Each structure stands twice: as C-alpha cells, then as structure tokens.
Image 1 (cartoon, helix red, strand yellow):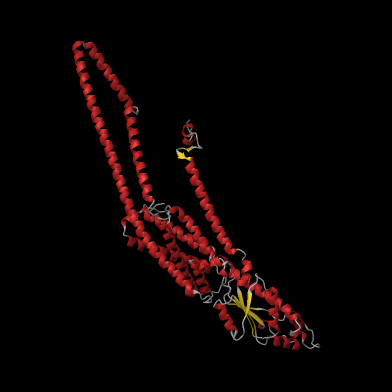
Image 2: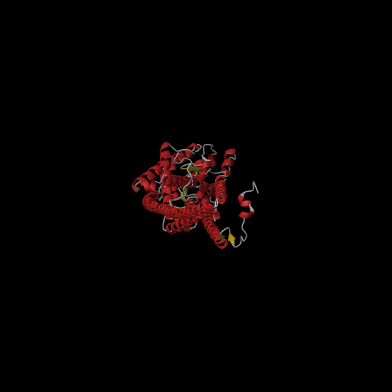
Length: 546
C-alpha cells in the first residue's frame, strides 16, 4: 500500500475503541474530558453572570446619583423646578438634593462641591432671575440674556459615557419640565404682567422660552475614543503584560537562567526589564490617547501624569500575573487571567452608584483606582480620591513585587532540584546502558568461546577425516566456504540475523523500562513543584535567528 499514510493503514487501526483508545483507557479519557468541560463552562458562566450583573438594571439605579440644587432667586422659577421634579421623580431619574443658599453662598461653591464629587452635578437659579424675566416682559427689551437664569455644573470626564445619559440628559429634561410648569403656574410673573404690553416677537419668544439652561462643564470629554478608556484600554494593558510575561519565562527556561544566575540577579533583571517594558507600553497607550483626543483640552502635564499612571498600573499587572504563574498550577493560569480581566473591567465599566452593593468590592482592584486617578488628572483635580486610590495602587505594587521576588527564589530552588534530578536520571541511563553493554560483551565473549571451542572440535574432526579420506576433507572445506559466503552475503545485503533482532528488542525494552521509571519519578516530583509560568515560543532564540 504505497503512498497510504501510516495512520490510515489497516494494521495501524485497532478495534475496540469504546473500551480502549489505542492503549488509552476510554473511561479515564472521557472522564478527564468531561471534568475539564464542566470546569470551563462553570468558570465562564460565573464570569458572564458577574459582568452582566454589574450592568443589570442600571437604569433603575440612576436615583442613586445625586444632583445638588440651590435656589438663589427664591421665586416662582424654583417652585417650578420643584414641581417638575415631583413629576419626574422615579428610580430612573437622579435624586435632586436641595440645599439652602447659606451652604453654598456662590455658584463657585457649588462647582467646588461637584469637583469634590459630593454631587454628580449641581443645578442652581441665579439671583433676581424672576425679576429679570418680569422686567424683560414689561420693557420688551432685547438685551435680556436667557443664559443668566438657570445653569448646571457637571464634569463630563467622570464616566463620560454614563454621565451624558444619566445626568446631562435628565437635567435638560428637568429644565424643560420646569419651563412648562413655570409658564402655566399662577404664581409666575407671566400672569402678573400688565395686560397692555406689546406682543412683539421678543415678548412672544420670551413667553415661549423664559430661559435657556446653561451648561458649565468642568472638563468636556466628547471624543469618540472616550468609550474605551475604561474598557478596551484596560484589557489591552493586561494582555500586553501577560504576553511579555510569557516571553520572559521562555527566555529564562531556554537559557536555563534559574540554574546559572543567583536569584538576586534574576530579580533585578526581571524588575528592570518589566519596568522598561511597561514604561514603553504605557507611553504608547498615552500617546495613542493624545493622538486621537480630537480637540480634548488636556495639556502636557496631564499627558505625563497619565503616562505615569498607566506605567504603574501596567507594572502591577505584570507582577500580579507573575505571582499567579508561580503559585498556581500552569493549567489554571489562563483561567486566572480571564478572571482578573473581568473583575478589573467590571470595577470601572460603571460607577458603583449604578451597580449592586456587592460590586463595591471593586475598590480593591487596581483598575478602579487607576481609573479614579486618571479622572482626577484629566479633570484638573476634580476627582479627589487620590487619598485611597494611590495607597491601594502602591500596596498592590509592593505586595506583588515581594511575592514575585519570593517566586524567583522558589523557581530557582526547584530548578536546582530539577537539574540534580535530570543529572541523576542521566547517570542512571548511563549506568543502565553500561550494564547492558557489559552484559552484552559477556554474552559475546561466551559466544565467541563457544564458537572457538566448536571450531577447534571441527578442526580436530576434519583433521581426522583428512587422515581417513582426502576426498571427504575437500568436500567439507567447500561446504564451509559456501556457508561463509552465504553468511557474508546476508551481511552485505543488510539483513538482520536473529541475534541482531533479539539485541534490538532487549535495547528497546531497557530504554522503555528506564523511561517509565523516569516519568513516574517526574510525576511524583511535579506534585510539589511549581510551574515556571506561561511560556511562548520565542521569535528569536539562542541562535538569534527566527
């Protein structure tokens, strides 16, 4: 059957697949496959449930977001706002928290309150607004400014995709509802103006729209790339560090660094290389954000601070993944990576005000604290949570670095044990080979002695035969030549004698026994040995070529 692959040859196929998979127990095989199948399904089910749970019914949790309200006018406009809020109040609408003007004497005080994140936004009515509207109706003046009646302060850099819908849109909706309530209220100035006023276009416009809500945005953040600052960017940083960790581990394994260098030097090299890698990677990310900022008003100082924050966050992830790869068995490292990504992204994808209380565990994850730091940087200090964000980040850095250093000592220890075990196994292989060789040499010597003895006996017999009959001696000599020729011909044709086949079988059996013993010892030792972490094939290896 020339040209047929070996695995398709009938002699290669074995019957009884249900009971035996080519020497593999079908029961054990399918049992292991089922366990891994269930484990992965349960893992991803839990992750899906966790991340979808963080977004579950976020619209019904908007009432947890507060808007400060101060009425500096103390007139019918404020009453209209209160009436409009009573009509809009629901779980899907932000909570309006009214404060007396004594608590916030000026609008700048309200801005500071929003900057301190006491409120998500602050709505206020300027002093003498009702009087200005009345005077404008009476005098029909065109110098009246609708923007000086009502305004709100907010910070779009703080979860920009969420605050647009949950805060800005709802404040505008409240303003429109208040305008309708104001124009129809018997207490408004519109019903108390003289009846003989001139209804000119200016007056009609003022009656239709007494004010135009003014937006005071602390940090406008409307560029399209803002949607991935707290999602894809966070994921890419983690993936970037995971892949570089695999490269570092491959370098250490291929060049046998753990057995050739002291742990202190290995720690120094890993820290310097990871710091440099995170330094460049975070620079690339910050540069990409700035390159596609699309008119976002941020300066060079904010760029450097953004770069430093990403740098710290990236190095934390490298160290954490390094620790995971040391203390967890290698098959569980990818699972832990996915869990780490989902937990971190869930801590920044939405503000905790829109998620269940359980998700406040996200305060402990570095992604949340890094994003809080970035918001503070981008909005010029209007997210003052650095008092806990930076300590949490540095705590992660310190603890992960210490555990990673301990992991280097652990790897070096087990690498030394592994090298000693490999040397021992090599010596055992050599001893087994020498033992087999000595046995083989002994058998050959005994065989040669037997052959020599037999040859001497034959020579004696032939000598006797020569003396008895010259004809028979010549016939015996020709037969011997033919026999030798046949044997020599077999050797020249490359055929194997039964002795050679037996020798090959004995060598194969000896190697198989030795391999089984080595694998058993490795399995026993691997139960207490750590993995060296994820390792990928290097584009450039020891020879420096691809």
